Image 1 (tube, rainbow, N blue to C red):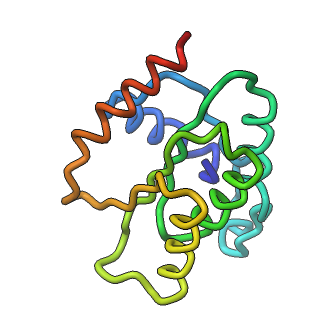
Image 2 (cartoon, rainbow, N blue to C red; image 1 turned 45 degrees about the vertical axis):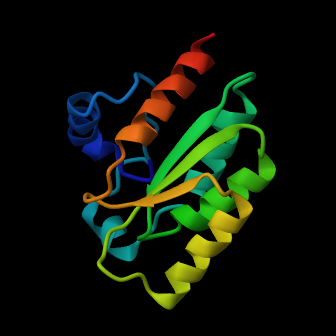
Length: 142
């Protein structure tokens, strides 16, 4: 996550309550208020971290979760190009009623690059998808 480490408790509660599989949670270093206002996060933190994890995880497949607000679609497209056989699914959460033209282009480009990209919101029925994800997780345990 590109979230700061001071959000650890909130994020772990969310993950636990929603029964996400156990795993590692990597967060950006804590930012003070001045840094937060300046937007002083390292731009490539998320890309580099995901790249590092995948590159150093032999025989593992990955499911990427993100949203349409910042750079997730661009980052995930880069990751999928670098590791086409390591990514099983990409989920992008819709955050607004309408997607801007720029974000729509990014989503279409991601879907062209990786057709197993799912764009969803709170009204989307993901039950069938969740069953597929459970199967993928079980396959990856072996």
